[in-house]
Image (tube, rainbow, N blue to C red; front, side, top):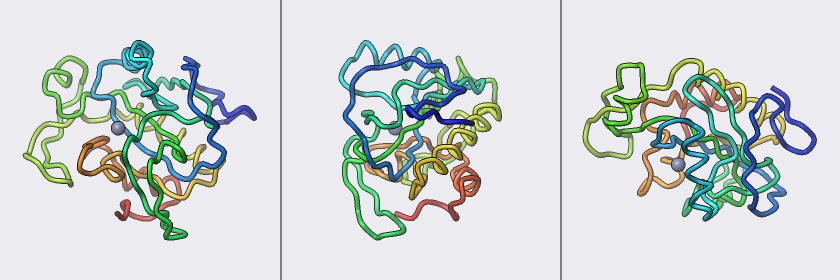
Length: 198
Ligand SMILES: [Zn+2]
């Protein structure tokens, strides 16, 4: 998967959301789920909100990739957050300023969304950050394959230092991408070891 000189994925459908600030250095890749219906429904929702909430890339359940903003501009996907760079030991705060965000179209732990939009049997699990055992929408293979291709391209092109979940960088607030996301496999495909280390 190619990334153009002006920081767009060649294979993505472009749905530009103007705004953001210049992001000159990218350190982290952050995974999310939308808690929503389709990728486009989430993008349209962000457009309506108009408050800066968005991610760089949104991947539909069928593997269709949408890009909303080039990778040299910030998106509002991380919020209050922090992560320690495993290479330098430096802790970064407010990761919107230095992280690329990928949103997976996924109903998360919403039984009604899972019933309406997922073709797979949900995963029954407790989140690693706690809470009750509940259903989590599984990610279809086509969606994970697309996520892996995009992630590998981003880590290689921008020499990213870590690949983490929103539930790693804001564990008190967030549960995405959740227990159904194959975090370790995705990290290893991109050259990182094991699970994220908080
Ligand atoms: Zn998130």
